[in-house]
Length: 484
Image 1 (cartoon, rainbow, N blue to C red):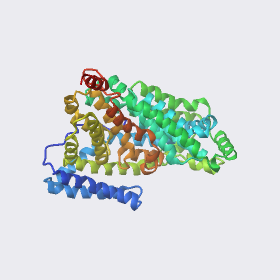
Image 2 (cartoon, helix red, strand yellow):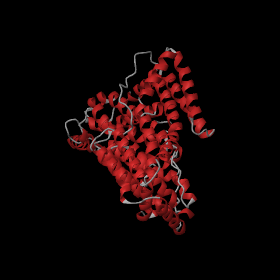
Image 3 (tube, rainbow, N blue to C red):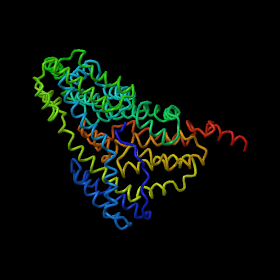
Image 4 (cartoon, helix red, strand yellow):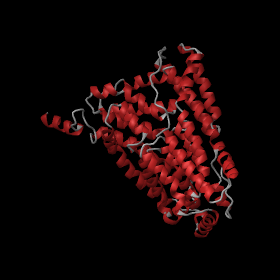
């Protein structure tokens, strides 16, 4: 679940740029972003994004648009992240409340007790996958369980980038496969595919990729030895600090249990987060936390004061103010995408990719590529599924491929690719909540890279490829060969 509103993705009427100019309007601003973030090292990359917005606006004016047209496109795009901003604000407060109530410390404590270091990445991947399948939300999973697992990995001495890679892989497994996920339901609807037919089709690419990712995380955990922070002596000090500094009773697990139950019952995301926040605050008040202190913690973040300096640094986080830089990045990134969308730059690029997609392999590859172009241009997970889903629907019908192949392919790239784009809505969210940029965690988000590979493999081999009449593409090809 991305936390974005589903609005009509079709651009308003206006002149189309030529293909060469569309490519330049896309590549040059993206190059500015990459130069500012990778070469110059501007972090957070607000200035590179604003520079890309200005450049894209200037390049789209000669196409025949007035500045007001482009401004309207920016404002329309910004409207899509209203819910995402609200979720970010809630998560900032929830992190502080879950620290004050002992919820996150309790998860860290039992994680250190039960998870063997060599299997930590694989365990984090599985835990986040289970939680996100149950709740249908990658945002909620990363902002709660993900924060706790990041703490466990930090105590064990693992790189935050590796830990977040495992968390992201697990969280987006559920975002893609859960029947209660917004992205899953919306993509199935856009591609006119029954929900469970869509999920069944996705299993052909996602389950094998998940197995590969799980094995990869086991190898990653076994080959990266934990440093001094993970030594037994240091670990004992951390456990002692958690025991003395927080109430680790089973009551601390009430907020995450409530989150899973309510989300699974399809209650809206903001009320669910409100219940998670309120339950944690009640627990903290019952344990004796002063109301005025809690109010300050919700605003500026929780400040831990245990006997361990490392633990204090680990658990001092959260609060409304902690998410403000991320919100600024969100608005800048969506403004950039709004200009490209309004000037029909992305539409021209998609039309060019659709031309020449005359075989299942080329069609699947074009669908994947189109979703990535939308992600790079707009940073929106929903648009990356919606626009190719509508643009390629008639071509899948013409080639007599089942529409579940289209819906699956849109999610293989659109849902899983979004956090890998450093200026996307999801990458900004991850950086705001977990403190690690996409440039750092993306190489370790194994599932997100492997699934599209299986998309191409399925198209090339015919496995998991169905025709509209329900028959297998592989079986039909074999029968045709035998008849010849």
